[in-house]
Image (cartoon, rainbow over the protein chains, first blue to last red):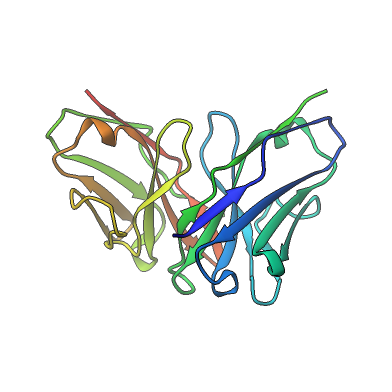
Length: 121
Length: 106
């Protein structure tokens, strides 16, 4: 069965960096795009962007350029999200979500369990 | 930037029908999907490509999309359907989520 298992919660100080990992299993990793979604405490879902798991080419949504980096390790079917120069407002749950369907009709059919990143001095 | 607007809350009695709207400019020209999120859990896809239900999603969930509005309908609402619901669509290759609707089953 398809599973996306994310790394555990992180507590970081402002200015530090963090890496969130998402390990996929139960399907061919390179056949599906991987998306990242943020949810700040008590807030809604926000699409951060996606990475092409075939080419490694990332696409970032507005507001997620510069400090946010998507990467892959296809040898272990893992997608990573790295955030640098952390700020208090980066405190959120970060989800990876598999993208299915074709351009214009992509939907997120499987989600990781979420990783809480807390930024506090 | 493209926006999808949902009512903040919808209340429904058990066994009745709940309708959740999602409004966006020419949304009917795009594919919409819907996610259910219960407290402390990850979102779950309940409708994709406007009207399709993933395997395992009960038939009481249905979707439609026309004009500027997509609608998620829950027929015969059960207590277990109490959750936040988010619509989602794509605009110029950018994913956009709706503002979210809290469904309360009274």
